[in-house]
Image (cartoon, protein in one colour):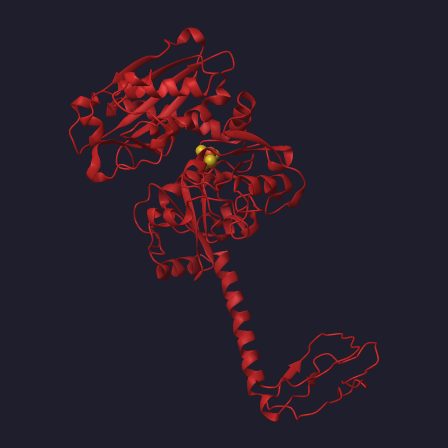
Length: 489
Ligand code: SF4
């Protein structure tokens, strides 16, 4: 059947990249408009294998140009239910990448495709074989889809007309997990789809943590695992909770070991720094630590300019992706910003210092009132200096915490300097003044009874290497102290 298409069709083309020089045309993407959507329908509402195009055909498109592009698939079957729409939709990415000469990136309203020059030379001049091949793969790999129909749109006006409704559908899907939380369920869901390019990626989907690609929430995972238990989405018995704030569970750790081929043994679902979730490459947003200000900042795919650390989303995505646990970087789905457990282990929103305005506006209703104005965007700060000024002016809690840490550090440094500058103690074993307890071999047990703040001179091997220890608020029990000189070799 695959012979009917003017291109090869195989999973081996999944990693194929079409660079600008090899590209015939670009479809949707950050500089245009588009979306992909799957809707469940009744059997009698669908013309099986039907295909319609609204707008210009591939053969009418000029080489090197960019065009808007949307794909809507209707599916039906006795086991098909609306809960399955998101996971079916997510597979469009896989199946279209099986097509030699076609590159599909991202999901939902972020889709970005390229048709290669090679494909055109081999005779591809219409979107119809792309739609038909995609539907054939869907039905082969997801047998619960009994009937399927495709509508492709390349007309900008038509896409713009439909976009608000489509966005409302995504929003309604995302809203479903609002009142459900990790502690309310015994089962989480895993997804291994991205292991084709990120072999150690371990995607865990919970009520409080949407997938990195943003396309699969807990309900979607549950529906997928139910209809196809051996498929890429599967149930995870969450097991005992090891860290409630960080979101560490026995069952997740077991899956981490097996899915990452032993590369990782622990995952904390709501932690940025300690055993963070792995990042495959499909994430909608990348988080990055700014050590100079001790804050976490976020940048999404649509923000092309550099973040205040001087790096773009593309720069940081390369560093973050690949299925690794990268401390200091974290890929997430946009809906995770709406989670009450959003990076709970690291201070949640109080640790967030910068994000692009467009992204901030999208999630603004979920940012706590007391911090929302203190989170900078590119309109407030574009580099570290201006960011520090903004956060200081706005009394951002992370800056207050940073100042406290810096003051403590300065105090510690000053103490170290004072110790260095203090005169060395005389050599030999010195009794503890006022304690009535000698320091040296064979001191009897019991409290040393050293007064608070008492400087405790200790014998040194030589006057030049003398040390001085100051104990404050200390209660010490000493059985024996042996002071030895280490001979230079
Ligand atoms: S990002 Fe995660 S949930 Fe989304 S397709 Fe990849 S593995 Fe699955």
